[in-house]
Each structure stands twice: as C-alpha cells, then as structure tokens.
Amino acid sequence: MPRIMEVGGGALERLAEVLAALGVRRPLIVTDTTMVELGYLARVEALLDAAHLDYRVFADTVPEPTEASIRAGVESMRDGTDQGAFDGLVALGGGSPIDSAKAIGVLGHFGGAIRDYQFPRSAARIGLPLVAIPTTAGTGSEMTRFTIITDDSVGEKMLCPGIGFMPAAAIVDYELTLSVPARVTADTGIDALTHAIEAYVSRKANPFSDHNALAAMRLIGPHLRRVYHQPDDRPAREAMMLGSSLAGLAFSSASVALVHGMSRPIGAAFHVPHGMSNAMLLPAVTAFSLPEARERYATCARAIGVAGVDDDDARAGQRLLDELAALNRELEVPRPRDYGIDEQRYLALIDAMAEQALASGSPGNNPRVPSHQEVTELYREIW
Image 1 (cartoon, rainbow, N blue to C red):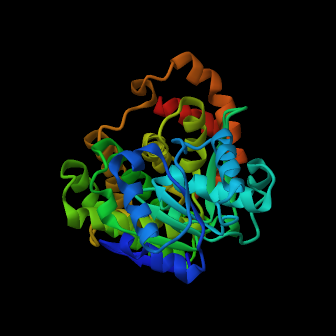
Image 2 (image 1 turned 30 degrees about the vertical axis):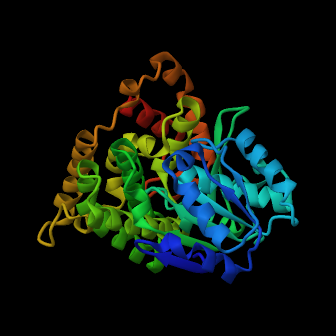
C-alpha cells in the first residue's frame, strides 16, 4: 500500500503536506494535455508555488503509454531543476500518466530499459517517492505495484511488476472525476469492476485481497450505471473512486487473471482503451471460467447486488453472467468488429495475441487456466 493516503473530496489541497512528509522539494510533475486543458495542472502548480517548491512539468504522456513516450519523460527527469536533481514525482491523471510516472521514476533513477523490468523480472528496489493523483475511477494504479508499457517496436504491452513501481502516496479525490465524460466513465468503471472480480477469483487470492475486492464490488455494483447516466452524481462518483482504489489494492495483492492477459494484446495491436478491451472480454471469459469457481463467482454476484443470499451458487453465477452482458449493452461497449477493427487483421493476429496473453503470466492466475487453443477460441468468440 502507499505509505500515505489522503482520501475524499478536497484531498488534493493536501498535496504540499504530503510532499513535505516525504521530504520532496523538487518534484517532476508527470501528466497529459487533458489535465492542462481542464485546469487541473494549474491547480497543482498553484499548490506547489504556495509551498515554494521547485518543480518542472512533463505533460507529454500518451494514452496507453509506450516505450518512446517513457524515454522522453526520462530525458526530462535527467535534466533536473535549476536547484538540482529531482527528488520525487507527482503523477496527475488517469492510469496512463500514473503508469508513465512509475516507469519514468524507475528508469530515471536506476537506469536501463523498461523491458528490463518486464514480468517475470521486476523492479525490486524502492526509488524516488511518487505521489499518485488519479482523476478517473478505474485503473487503481495509485494503489498498485504494476505498470503497463507498450513496446512500440513489436506492438506488445509489457506487464512490469515490483515494489519500485509502488507509489509512496496516493491522493484519492473524487471531485477530480466530476468532469470525466461518459465513455471514459464507463470504460474505467468496468476496468475497476474487472480488477475486483479477477482479484477475488484469482489463484493468488488471500484474505486481504478478498476483503478489498468484495468491498470494491459492493461500491461499484450499485453506482456504475448512475455515474454513466448522471455524471454530476457526487455520492456515486465518490463510491466509484473509493471502489476503484480498493480494487487496486485487491489486485495488487492477488494479481489479475485471464481478462487482463487477453486484454493487453488487443490494446497494443488495435489501440483499444484498456477498460474497453476488458469489457469486451469480461462476459465471455467469466462464462469460460465459472465452472471452476462457482462459489467465488456466486459471491461476486451477491457483492455486486445482482443475486441474493437465497440464490444458490448456480443461480447466482447465471445472474452474474446476465448482469455483465446487460452492463455492456447499457454502457454501449462495442464488440471488436463494432469498434472498427479490420476483421482480416484481427483474425491474422489471434495466434500472436494468444501467445502474448499467456506469456504475461496473468492467465495462470485464472480459476480455469486456458490452453493456447482455448485463448484463440475466446478471441474468436468475442469478435
């Protein structure tokens, strides 16, 4: 977990206090152009100016961060400030700026290339402190010891784990999500739901991850539709933000499984947003996996609120499948063919995507561990 957590509306105002507690005087702010346009970066800069901190800004992160975009951030970090080298980082934005900041911090401090930290290798040493400030309710990256970076030379999303990627502090302020548009709200919300479900059914699940995953599902289940249809619903936004962070804690401990393993290659090959590719896969992968973990999936259905205590596990499991399909319809999640992906290219890449999915290690955490052939069949099923 992050050593410092500030949670709730207005938590952003405590940024300078958090940096002081970590001994950071010269932070690099890692963000993107959306945060600049929305005025969130200006708010952060005003807080740092008031605290008389010496900082610089790297605002060139990209959606689904790549090795090239990370290298540009590392170069900015090596430049330092007028008063010396950076002694910490502040990540502001959704999962992409936070994941970018994690990689920039590790590479800028320890050196090497991001592939040096790809699973099964890891960033095993703690480096410069990172303060993560999420502005979407979905990735949970502020709570995890993972980062996902695309190797743009081969079109592969690399899962990079390790304590070096763990933020030292998280500022979880749901008010920063009030401006998030409906499409991003849906994609990131289903991403958080997927984190919670996969952490709960993972072969690496444990009492700590179970507690956080179930708490996350109880928050996300009743509120995801509400924030999609009513973006200014503050109680629902707050519930989703907390649910996302709890889901992050859960999968940071128990890891994710087959949905994420199969999702990353779709994102890398076709530039589908991560939460959306998870949503494309979640119903089919859940149906595939359910026979090997009926009790666990039934508990998920009850936590989400679509099954009651009187429903037996078989009925609860079916209610979960029905809910995931209904959720995709209501939140207008496209199938790959409806997203505009070329069918011939998709079918031609299925074998390679299956290889990448299995190599990531995530499918090995699934209740039902798939063969290469079964992964290719699932890719065809969701088309």
